Image (cartoon, rainbow, N blue to C red; front, top):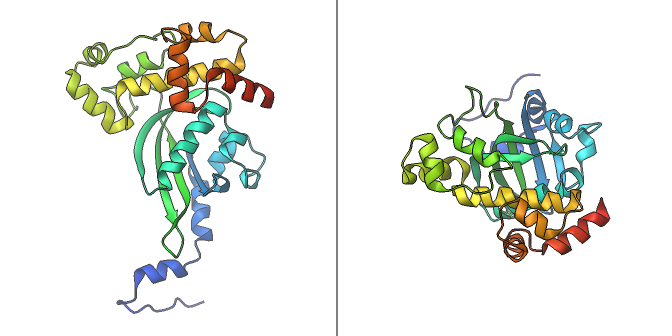
Length: 252
C-alpha cells in the first residue's frame, strides 16, 4: 500500500489524533526492566507491557486489565500509587523521580518513575500513563545518584530509625543546604519526609504481617510512642494503625 502524501501545512495535532497507535504500543513490550502502564480515572489498569506482566507474575498482560493497585501490590504501596494517580489526574506530572518501591514480592527496589495525565478530546484528564525503570544496585557504579547513594543506603537500612539532615549531608560530603537541594531535585521530597514515609510504610506492613503490638511497632520504626505513630500514620494513610490492621488482616 502506498503511503498517503501529507500537505506540509497539515495540522500535526489532527494527524496524531487519526493515527492508529496499536503497533506503537507493541514497541513498549520490547523494553526490558521498564514497566509501562495506562490506568483509567478510577485506577483500573487498561494496558501494561510485558515487563510489568513479568514483574507482577501475571499469566498474561491482559490479566492486569480491570485490576487496581490494591489487587496487585501490598496495601501500603497501593495507597501511595493511588495518591500519585490523584495528583496526576489534576494535571501534575511526575518526571524522573527516584523512589524506593516494594513490589508484590515485598522486595525493595530503586526505580526512576515518570507519570503523566491523559486527556480525552474534550480536554479533560481521564487517565494516567507511566513508566518505571528499574535502577542498578544502589552500591553499584551505574546507580544514577552516586553522590547520594551512601545517604540512601543509610535511610534504606531498617535498623537506622534515627537520621538527621546534618548527619546524612556529612556522610556524602555536602553542606546541609546542598544535600537537601540535591535530594529534592531527584526524589521530589525532603530527606526527612522521605525517611518518615519509609518508616511509616514499614510500620504499615508490620501491622499486617506481624502480631506485634502497635506500641512495639512504633518503637521498632523510630516513633516516640504509639500516639506519635498514630498521628503520623493517619496523616499519610487516612486511618489509625488499629483500623488499618483490622481492615487488611481481614483481606489477607
